[in-house]
Amino acid sequence: MKVVISADMEGTCGVVSWMHVTPPEYPGKGEPINQSEYNRARGWMTAEVNAAVAGAMDAGAEEVIVCDSHDGARNLIPEELDPRCRFVTGGEKPLSMAQGVDLPGVGAFMYTGYHARAGTPLAPLAHTWTRTLNDIRLNGDSIGEFGINAIVAGHFGVPVVMISGDEKAVAQTKALLGEQVVGVVVKEGLSTTAAIHLHPEVARQRIRDGARLAVERIGDARVFALPEGATIELDYDHQSRADQVAKLTEFTRVGERTVAYQPADGLEFLRLFKNAMEVAGITLSP
Ligand SMILES: [Zn+2]
Image (cartoon, rainbow, N blue to C red; front, side, top):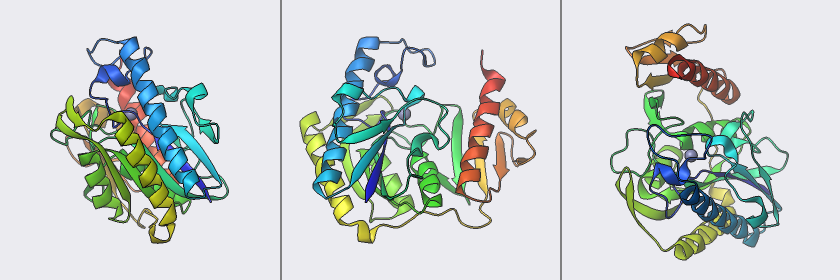
């Protein structure tokens, strides 16, 4: 069995600031760029990915493919990666944060460095996709990036089996996808920009153990498929974004800052979501 790891950055042990996670070409809103802090955090992220690769390999995975899933997707440090993995980097990937789940033989999908969904109190760097989206709901239930990517993987029959991140990200993922998902908490949130962390080496050992357990328990895994006739709602931070997205034929305006659509399947779900985000982003971009 092959395993795909979607590696985000905000949920990494040691990370609490937008400075840690903002590449120089993607300036945050008002926060200063700090390239040395960012470069250190890239190393922490890469080390957590390596722990998950090792755990999957410990349990007999045939191959591990790592998808860099954070802004710009050029965050992992290639020469520091476990030589047993292949990796995906770069932007505008067809499957975005879930690139690789369509490859033949992939049977498990893992999240490292994941964060809580937009709006979560006291959760480090919590957001969903961008800081301009207030919420995304599937049939009324709020989902975060952990839900978006689970739907894409589900389209290919691949289950999410592990998540590592802060304690709220882990709890939200298990609440949506099921208790069978192995959760590894590497820090507990104290605010949007504060946490109490495990030591990084302890966090990495727990991720390795969690990844191994998740592959060993593949029999318990559950695919998260988009329900037939599902309605997706997107809440933006400003009505003008919803104005723009509502002009797309597939979307309906259902609230002051809210649009809705009904994708036919998990791939259309992602394609239309990305279209909407692009159209909404252009509205207020400088
Ligand atoms: Zn990210």
